Picture 1 (cartoon, one colour):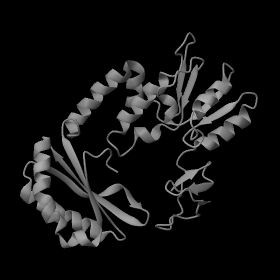
Picture 2 (cartoon, one colour):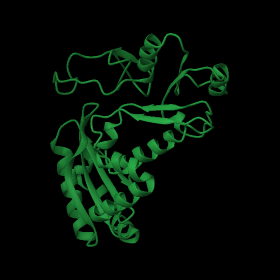
Picture 3 (cartoon, rainbow, N blue to C red):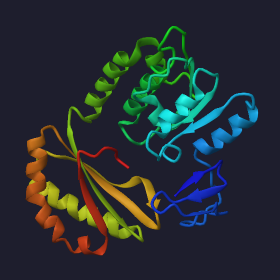
Picture 4 (cartoon, rainbow, N blue to C red):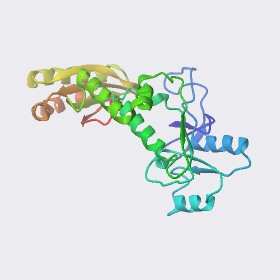
Length: 278
């Protein structure tokens, strides 16, 4: 569940059910709850209040469900001054000739994410959204909301563009043994209590060590989000320099891993070429 409307309610992404924000964490009872960003609806409310003399259009999945809804909203705005509030869908494939100012809010999550691809995704998004401003004969500006304006990623993008960022990012990926210089698989496990995931991943690691001499193994480690929906989560990261070595080891190991007694006491999954490490 995620916080929407300025932290006032929770909404489930799967069924749409809403409920008030709890006073304490439902998993651990902790009181240190913090809102994680402001949704598009809340931004729309704030901007409409502060800029009452111009139209404010919210463009996200909820407001553009009907066919041609986005085109109708933009056509209704025409050449008038206005404010568009939207998700990433605004960054791609739209020609807005009168757009002169783009503001990207809350980018710090991408600067400090546990996902090793987060910087790449953020850099691509910023380049794409920057391309929306000043596309015609009017110059454009891009504003970024961050607590870390001196972050190397932002300074590199500003000074050298995406090409400079990509060169530096590839060097870091090579040094860390991440794609495209390695091939990864992620063995995930979760259970209501902490011991079963760790026990299973330790046993699976033993099987992999016996059959996969060309692999590097990292873990068992807590997942970046160690608790979710009442389950404790852990993972084991597999890395190989060639895809052949990775798949050969997995083919040889998976029957024995499935037969482990620990495997029947929890939920587990194998993600080859994981999009993220969460």
